[in-house]
Image (cartoon, rainbow, N blue to C red; front, top):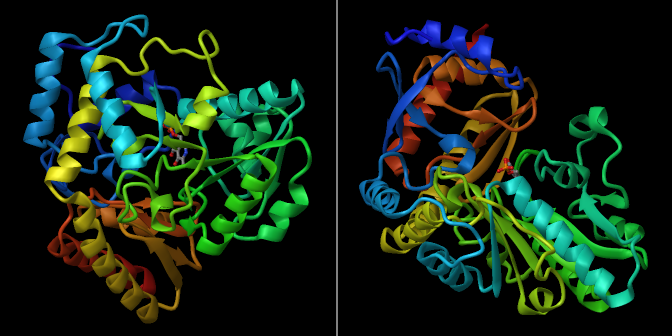
Length: 405
Ligand SMILES: Cc1ncc(COP(=O)(O)O)c(C=O)c1O
């Protein structure tokens, strides 16, 4: 590549020539961000209702967050898990406090957190009966990531098919259908895994009664309940973790995305019961997971959540967003419904939403889909009512255009 800065179009051409084609990217090179706005290389401003897929909770260019990262870079970026480092200790203590869980293992991505959670569950069961044929029960329409373990428990055959065989001994049940869970549980089941609110699968919250029944079943049979909070966690539903809304505590949970607000970091956490009877020295590891830079991010993110009352904002603005989306459902016959919790909302269309999302981008609004016919609203958690109003104006424009065409 030449020394001279390229135009936006030229960067896109370079990208298409250099990167593996696993994404159909929009024709935009994003260059910088500020609060809830992003700017492309040509200076065009976008209101962001995607937040890097539910990641940038605090908004872009947050001064305190940036300063904390810069200070850590000047101290030390990486050590190794053979030594202790202060940011990891501080981050783990804060995570225990907000989650009520007892043990933390840091990873680099959500999928890796899922891998660790599955390994912990299998080891827990193995230590009980020495068997090596345990089963894991997952949910249809779920999404847990792209690595083999995570893919194996992802309830959408489309993601799995070309990569079969999966890890094996995985069964699927329907979310919010307790009978279907009962029909799939056997004496080999060691864990039940689900997202507390399904994200990619179409914004489906697990219902209170269902969660409580699954929890009771797990208690009765000593099956571990794994809640994937990678997308719905970190304040997005108006609770630090979505399961806290109903008080249905998992044995193992995963968290990522907004945990580092852009620095790649995730974690799986467990209760003392599981911690004491599962993974032990030599069972699991990672080079980068829990390094000082990533954990300085986690630590600062958790401080800012508290200081800036992020969860209160989610509750207030989330309710407002829901109200505004409900009003749209009544106005357009191609909108079927909306559903969601807090600032994790989905709008269900009877038509594919790709065209609407492209039109929005053109008009300076970033939205994403969940499947072909759902628009997902997962903005930074610092958005205001005014931002919601601005978003609705642009969205309405797009919907009106689609209605006419
Ligand atoms: C619920 C859920 N679990 C797991 C993952 C995988 O996380 P990552 O992309 O960081 O590997 C995602 C990613 O979107 C997710 O939404």
